[in-house]
Amino acid sequence: MTSDKTGQIEYCRFFLLEDLPSPLTRASAHIQIFDNYLPETRLRLRSIRIPETNEWRHALQQRIFLHKESLAEISTSEINLNELEYEHFKVFEGNEIRKNRYYHEFDARLAAFDLYLGPLWGLNRMRIDFDSVEDMRNYVPPAFALLEVTNEPFFDDANLVNKNFEDIRDAVSRLNSRAGSVETFCASE
Image (cartoon, rainbow, N blue to C red; front, side, top):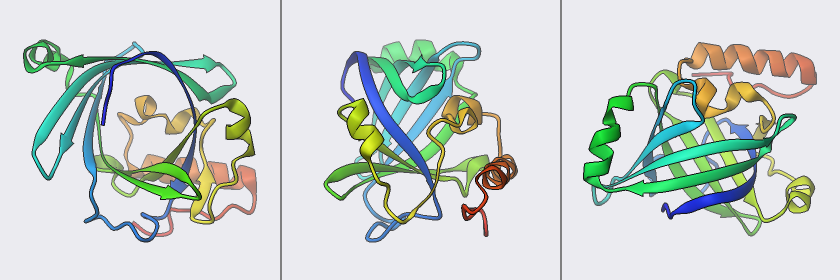
């Protein structure tokens, strides 16, 4: 689940999806993530719930993009919080993104699939992590990955916090018109 991270460098790419790929379904094992972004900072308060056990974990995280032109390399620091510590940070709740996260291996890579809830219902995103920049650049996404949004700041969760699904549709339309032949994932709600 979560572990203490201190300045860990993450290499990742993000893709929009129509829905969960087979064999996953919405009933498959998953975790629930509640990310509360502290305004005008690089900090978020993350709460993770395991539905099967109703176990909760909390962390304070800082995410720093290492390159202005690329959102694929992120330095992440994390401090796990106990319940008492978390209570002190609860005042920052309110700028929240909620999503269900599913994990599944495709082509010998573990993928994280986020299905957004609330106002962002209908947004489905896949995250793939890599060991190196070279590995990340050489990755060929699966056919069910409809549109890459790795370097699109609009699709970073800190930006999505005050958005809704109509905003997502508009952003995808703009990307599709730029890309030309890319299919839209927003055909239906």
